[in-house]
Amino acid sequence: MDDIKPVKRSGHVAVLWNNNMYIWGGYNESDDLIERRQFSSITWKYDLNQNKWSKQTTGNYKPRERLGSCASCVNGKMIVFAGCVFPDDQNDVNVLDLRKMEWKSLQPTGVPPSSRNKLSCCVYYDRIIYFGGYGPSPKQHEIRNGEYIADTSVWRNYRGWNNHLFAYDINTNAWITLPNKGEAPCPRAAHTMTSVEDKAFLFGGRHKNERLNDFHQLCLKTFTWTEITPSSPYQPIGRSWHSCIAINRKTLFLFGGLDTQQNVLCDEWLYCLHNNEWIKLNKPNSYPRLWHTACTGAYHGQVVVFGGCRSNIFADNQEHCNDLIFFNLQPKPLLRICLEVVTLHGKKLLKKDVLPKSLYELVSKMAGEGG
Image (cartoon, one colour):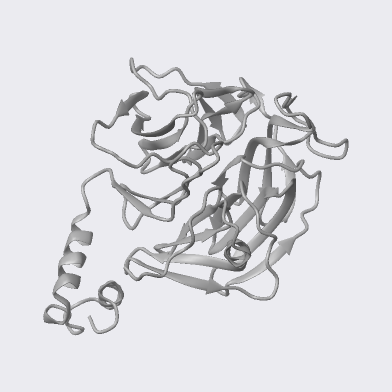
């Protein structure tokens, strides 16, 4: 891997597209103004085939640097919503075209959501579904289809937690207020939501001074919530700032976070949808991490974690990270094994006339120039 890589950060966003992971935003405690400006001006791409970072300089317009945003990738476009531009939260929508590397600010129609950060989202067809977050109380002209609880632990208690449920319609560029039916989760922030087919799964987050481990399912057809009671005797402890993503249609993977006692966690869990049970992975792990990002990797069963903080984020000396952690949660596909063997031996096995064009181009890319 080349020495060039993003500066250390937490609270950033990451999406996967075309076997590349794109990183934007976040923060650290650096006093270097030039370094801090990179969070907004530079989008980073990590090529999962070449195992290589590269800077992606975008056009003239760039969103203001921020943390705690929510990002999704749809049709080669990274859609970023909300986040904190210190000291204020935002409710704007910005889109980065990953083909052209150009940002665009959108002005959706409809009743807008209130400003917030540390919310969650998932994609369902042509809509991005959003839930919860932390920010100011919604105004009269903003979405109010849930509860808002003020944060009384700070002297300026104009911010708090909510459990609003709404969507951004990509095709019509419009906000949609969703029904939010059933047993809706209580207001929270720094939780996770991931989707499998027509269901979304929400875990944990912070509510007031408690970090939760409740588990909820949202039907994406009717927008009805149901709380899940796992059948397993053990389950993850309460946490926020963790990651939880679907690695296939049957399994979710949960990693890290911060517990109620402000311990940074490094445990790994699988949730089996069919058996409704949590399974703790009992393998050595020396990567305590919170407020990181997690994306699916180059093949099914691989998860790539970037950045985050390895220490208590409320402490004076924060240890932000810029390393990559790879979790291989199921056997590597035979095709991937073959590609890596061919890549390892370079020109000895790389014959254009015997490989299909698509495989030849992929192996050439994995081998790099001169491979």
